[in-house]
Length: 550
Ligand code: C2O
Ligand code: CU
Ligand code: CU
Image (cartoon, rainbow, N blue to C red; front, side, top):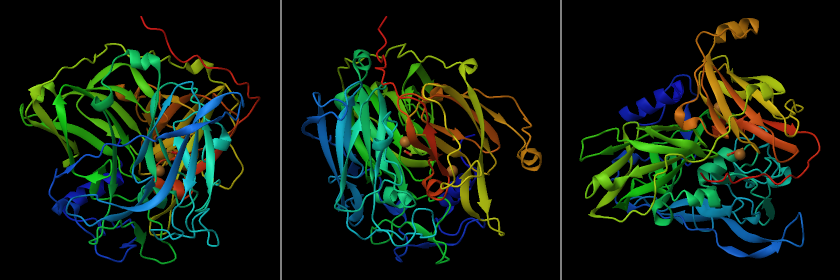
């Protein structure tokens, strides 16, 4: 489960040869840049050090929009185009990023302490990639380059959430207030402009953010140099070292259903390596890809192990209740994994992070023994289960693919509804709902809701044929509970094909308009996104965040 059938076919095909023209159901793809594709597998591996992501520097204090007497930390982050060295032997690549970084610098925040971030658009006025003007929100007649930043996983108000229609052109900026009334987690900020989000993200407009608190600090997990954020994503390059976003061969239909690249980057480098000490590290992995799911393993040479053991300690919205031993981790786009890897057993050797059968990056473990003052707690953070009996509403929501007569996908929908149609999901503030994602397509879709965190109840196979012909849910197997690594708080869930995926959500924090969508960006851009309204009276209540130890 997990890997989409279509991406599986594509990934296997890629192993054999190149990317172009692999599947008959796909529209013919061309290269937007016109230059031939470069084969990433021809490059030497592990010659570039892994970039250490810098921090967003605080530039001062500004009054809180909620209370002018309170001053909040103020950050400025500028979107730029610049050239980046992706690999020693690849020509410099034109990318978009924040400051001079792609992925952008880390935005560090504390739970319960609000911050203000000014997101400044200083991108050029010409886009790096071909825009498909047939797509909703990308119609001709508006600026080609426009962006709006969303902080994924943040519990923030509707005016600060990067609503897809709230984009702005180069020369403009917007200040967002993130109150951080939430538990610690790895968040990420990224563009969300309607109809061109997949292109802006492919260009590099994303970065990592952390929310932390005293309780998490007190767990004494590996920190500072021993905590490594790893942002994974795949790209396609042309022979000039430039990013090549594929387009449909028909000039009137440039959109392609999913983009998968043969080059897997970590923090902006292809096949990087890092020198690590022989001790425990905390790895915080984000899948920042447009469409690719990662199936990650660690291989070690000492014990001739392809599937070395590690411990998962958290997922999208923070820590699990207890560590879970694992040998692999699966991440769909936008999902995060928090894990502890103990390199002490591998002193003087190399550990390779792999995706399926491909090397991604290398850890060179020092031969010297290291002092490791960090702890490996048996218990992490209480995760209170939401109870199904507390749900005031259950929604059945289909995931749909619309095909042309040749059975090629032309768009994806949520509940057969387009972006522009009236809002249909309107939960009440502080109520609990159960959402059933009835996946009628051949693909898995990572479904993400803004504003909230949720828990996965289960996944259950059903007859797609019966549903399509009668509208009845006929289950064909029993309900499967979430995997141990996804049993905590989530904000993105893999809704597998032929399966009903149930999540339980409390709509906390704010009223107003937000969005939910598939995080495969090609789908999201082409109608697989819907607004939702949280209704009722907003009573700001300080959430109690930190559980007491012991
Ligand atoms: Cu990563 Cu709408 O979000
Ligand atoms: Cu989000
Ligand atoms: Cu999708």
